[in-house]
Length: 493
Ligand code: ADP
Image 1 (cartoon, helix red, strand yellow):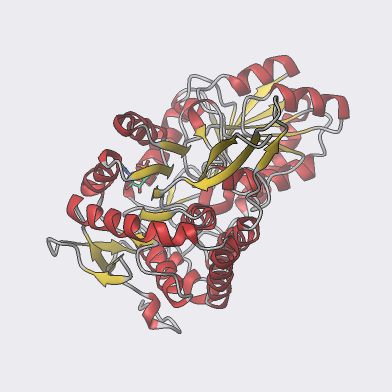
Image 2: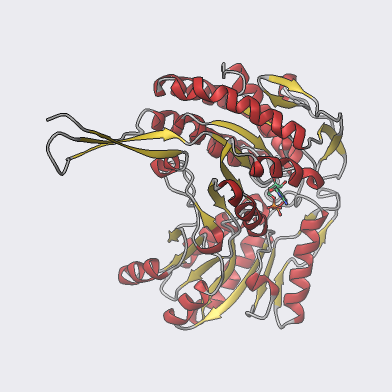
């Protein structure tokens, strides 16, 4: 089906460097495919290190003027950009659904969510306060100011094509940084459309540069930024494996890093939980984006005393989910992003069933009259999960809920923490003392307490352990793009 946008100029198929739309220096391109059908529907530059370096040069040249602008003027730009994103919600959602596969209603929600970061950082831009420190001796004045880090390279994943890039670019620009960005190879078009709107909002040339490339050239483009001393910070959302590579390869120039990496989120249902609320919370947390989110509950621990009742309630809700393409307004679960993703889900389910799991719902690919294509997987519940299964230790990144049994608080907290990851954790209980105890002991950056939806532009999002470091959103999110300068002025006595 053709992609009909109200504003056809939002479908951009070129890099955006120094305020110009341009092809890659080699002229190479790669195809963007619709995950619902596998059909290719657009082509964008397959850029290389030369293009990355051009983007860096443009960002470096634009830095002094952008950094020197009064914060309120940078904020004005961000507000105009925010208004344009909101005004073009339908087109952005259509574009995003087409390249990523998520249902249209979710895509519209993501536009609002991504835009909320732009608005938030427009407001934060004017509040990057410093300090005046009482001097230890007469005649000196000690002051602390916050300054933009410099040129920032942003590398983003495909699961939230708009929100991930917006929540990196907005704080960077608010702080006075300039940006070079590489969106995920599967979803370059939403990022390019955002750049088009930034251009329309009047962003000066070179302040934001977008370089697209294919998976096999990602290392070439990003490698050029990692090695370049002009790039002062890397902000990355993606897998822990790639995050570790970036940390190693940026050591040569000791860059600042914000890494938002993989998770393996536990979701604990205690025996005193409100089970209906827990099912609601799990449905919201697990099935958003078909389970392809880094805060998606990967291990669901249910107390023995409520295990049967919880399983039954959950199964009924999961069974009722509607699987289909984004173009179908009623779809709740779209296709997975690509064949590699469905293969992994299938392998996890096969492994779990071979190791004693009991299939309650789903457990197969879907390819029928509505969800017709290679990348659909049925929402799945597997009971009697155990820790020998691959899905206990690896992110499944799909619509699969494994239910583990537990009987003791101490035991379940240890199990929840028994992972190298530490992004999100959730638990449901009505015992207020347990709330305090468990929230403190969970080793994650985010904790949902009787709540399945955590992310908000007003709150700090980020992990601990091998889920990375740095925070996005909230006033903490601006700090990631600022450095602290201490001035000591003498001779004042
Ligand atoms: P996923 O497995 O979800 O695709 P990745 O961590 O592989 O997550 O990808 C996240 C982002 O990192 C994407 O923009 C991708 O192109 C980029 N990327 C992947 N491999 C590399 C690499 N070796 N070096 C630099 N960037 C990479």
